[in-house]
Image (tube, rainbow over all chains, first blue to last red):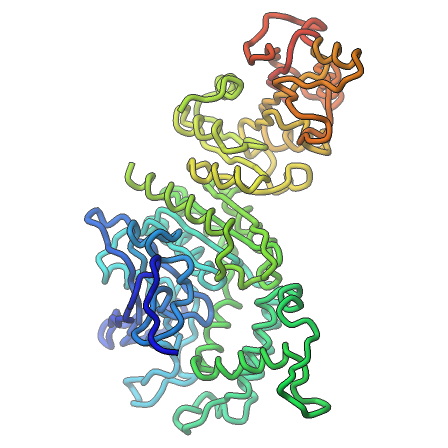
Length: 383
Length: 197
């Protein structure tokens, strides 16, 4: 396929920028006591920051996302991962809002992560990269908005791990944002959630190519482990009905071998997902970022909600009825904690057959909710 | 934006500055008015998706859940006022809902259409199901699940230990009526009650 001309409603051709937000001299102070510098962050922006600087919406991406949320990179045939939501006339209308999306630290798509060069050794960090907590991700987001000249966000929003970042941010620094939009997320993983992460990590770490995290220096990559991790995670992102509808028990016609090879369409699909993932994602980033989610439990702090008393945030929490990765119970728990603290919180459970991945999809009811919420939010911030 | 007359009447019964839970808040008009004009805070509860989106658009915090089964999401004594406006006839479990309301708030405002209005009684005598401004749907096409007269509604309040502090019978056009006792059950198309748990 050749170059695709962006259609109406697209933000068009975009490029990823990079900012150096912390240096060796002024490192990022990690919430577990270590420090990290320099820290580079890849990010994209869409729309214009207005004169009052009150129209900025910050997008926090999920586990394996990146800074490319909308529009097309030069020559690309597929748009950014949240393109159905962001653009002129879309719920995140770039004619009204200034949208910012970074790549997470700890990641591998332009921001500093475990495979970046450690200036102290001249080699990739590997397992010397400090353990990350949700607060570290938020600290970098805060530095980025300052870098962009934004003092207060109209909203921070994100799905899954992205929603968790928003929750942490709004609890710790409510003065930074007027609205917090938490989608298909959790305030605390269940044992089952952690169990899935544990199997994924074990698959990666027991791959012979992993070499105690020094695979990059050896010119290797634990591809088998990483692709198995992705295959398993992918199953949890879709509902059983969605998999049935997509594949049923349909055979994989191109494969003629008998026995234990790839015989069903769903096997072929997962195999493809695993292989494609290895091309774009780093094994150590996967380990570090899944760990961030495991540790996350902001309401364990008895003072978690105290800062909101002086600086209330308006909340929108959204779940999807077929999501079994972070089902509606996870969202309800967040809602209960906020509502019991007297916070203005709206909650919707959206009907969708697609499971956890619904937050990435164009579902009318879901998009109408976000559109309505954000339009009101903008009126309020201006009044 | 001017409030529908029956909602304006409910709004007048809510003390300024209250924290209000509006069960079956619809598009959120009552709460929007209370928040904007009466210094109230509050939350709406609604199950119809389109109404929830409208309420969100009015800036009303609204939680989408089922009043019949999910009111235990709200903490004991967490609201000053709990409103159930023209909704009691649409739920399955009146006893549970009223009990939960009394647990959540100290002051309850309940409004209900009156099946015992004289015109309804006449329609029934003619062998037809009641239809009126307050009960506007055909029997096969109504969101209303359970019908009551004011007399029986008040009996239920009594049985649940809810004290009627105020009763405002309404004419079929929504005007407050100056009638009392059994006459209200005959003359009112609907009524608004202020209850204490």
